[in-house]
Length: 193
Image (cartoon, rainbow, N blue to C red; front, top):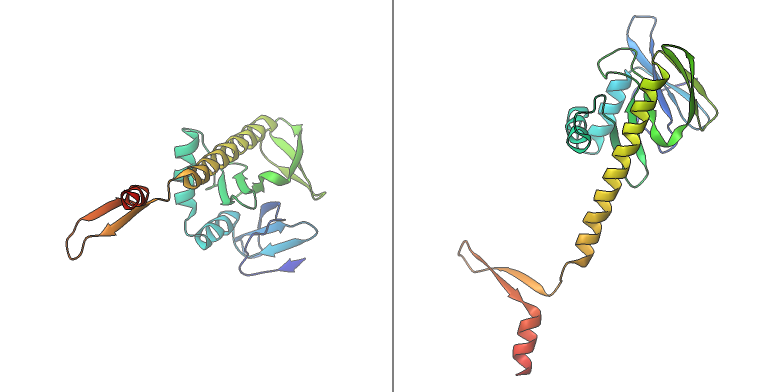
């Protein structure tokens, strides 16, 4: 198994699973497409590190997801809309046993017993977690809903941007505080008269 001290999640990263090191610290195994990487950071630290890399944090992402989803708990986060990198926790972020899963890498899940679920990943790995199937499915559904809302809003913003008029100029009026707005189309019509 490969080891890494800092870990940036990739498009093919599928899950971050915690384990206790020989020194009693919470570390992680990251499941990529065809390899497992051991990282001396907790899953929460890996998610936070990756969010900070794009200019936010786990706290900021949690607040944003709460705004989008409302009162849902254990909110998903987005690392990249363009690459479809939506992640969600198996349980509370603050629990040492919390694992994180990439939404696009979930193939299926099955109950092992009342409080244990096996999660089947698209890369062929199976991960057992101590969470009921219903709880896991609820978090999976919240992540799917979050993805749909974020992508719909993102597309709307892009559409609004493209549809905006380009025949208006906003010009700083000399040394004054004010700006003036000129409609280039009206100016052209004035020139034709």
